[in-house]
Amino acid sequence: MKVFYHCYGSSHTSVVAAAIHTGRLDPGRTPTAAEIRAVPHFDQVLDADLGTVFPAGRGPDGEEVFVVGFGPGREIVRRAVISFLELKGVPERDYLLVNALTRANWAVRAGGVVSRRLGLVALGRPLATWGIQRAYGRLAGLVRETRAEVRRRAAGPAPAPAAEAGHGPTPGGRGPGEPRPVP
Amino acid sequence: MIIIYHCFGGSHSSVVAAAVHLGLLPEGRVPSGRELRALPLFDRRSPRSHGVILPLGRDASGHEVCVLGAASCFPVLRRAVLGVAACLGVGTHDVVFVDTLPCVNWLMRLGGVISRTLRLPWLGRPLVSQGARMAYRRLAALAVSTRDRLADPARAGSAPGPGLSTPARGGSAPT
Image (tube, rainbow over all chains, first blue to last red; front, side, top):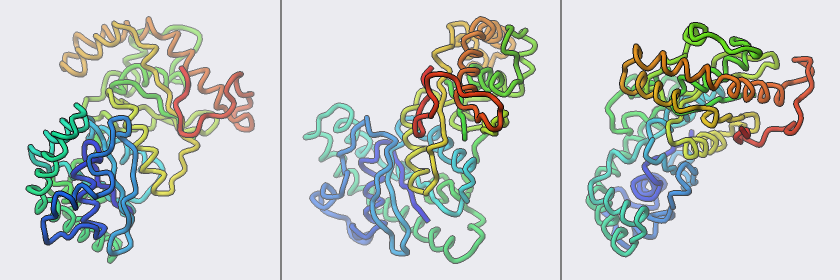
């Protein structure tokens, strides 16, 4: 099982979610700003690296965790990934695409734009870090749901009825059963 | 091998090129507007289908020929698709992306926007059909060169075309 947390730029929500998932950050305690900034790739990835998949470690059940930024066309990129894997015959139970951006708040978004897009790191990074602290409980919840889905899939052959296998289950934040790609 | 013709919406230039590749449209003459509009996917896909890689059929060499509307995010899309696939242990050396947008003219763009984005097919479809006819020779040349370049001599009975005998790993074909 592979878990791919994705957001806009693989710089903020996805990397923090992956850090929680892999045990680098404690889901029960909001980390300090220094702890957040020490997370690999936090507020580091450039626009030129959008779409690049970065490994983030392993989860408690041995699942591999990755982060990736889908950029402004995230639904388009997501549909492409899913349809390509279908073409290649990859079973949906083998992966999860989890949209971490749904747990972002205005501060994370604004800080990300200021730091990554405008290059004003001194201004944007503290704002994004503060935003992550404010959104931390929601990100921890996303990881909790994702881990539960990983365990569900490991336990039985059939995916949970409420979750669309492979499409980022409920952790995607869009409620149960995300729409399938429209041909 | 998977050959993915891609353009903005996956409705016009990529569909025409894929159809020529598969022999659904003629190589030696420009088809009528009616022939173009009779294609299953021509001017049919909505923006909600952007990103979906849709197989149209297999060519004589057994390659899967697909169309894709990548909107304006193809570079990111390509990296993400190949990156995620690689993480899952899926081979991508047999994937070729072919960009059909350089063959597109202004009439196709205008008609495509009117038909697909503004949802006025009665107005946009005749325009985009005429534009596709004007761009047809370039699209057909691209499809034929791609097909011949990637042809399996053992199955198709034809030698690969000159220039590029081996596709770049998961790369875009030059247009």
